[in-house]
Image (tube, rainbow, N blue to C red; front, side, top):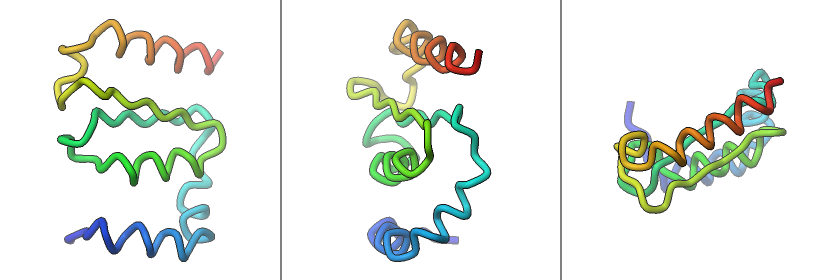
Length: 88
């Protein structure tokens, strides 16, 4: 399956009910991490999804590559601690 980002985002914007239905089962504790433009997850798609999920948290690591956990372990740990604190 080939996903063309320039086509996928407009389709999702035209079909918000479908997107809401697909995301409705995700809990408020859902956390998505995107490490920047050279990652496998396009940041604008991930941000748009996070914006549509009530209680979701979007974090962007602007100065990291795909190896963010080893490049910025303290920041990653802070994000994880914040996420886990929201669960209790």
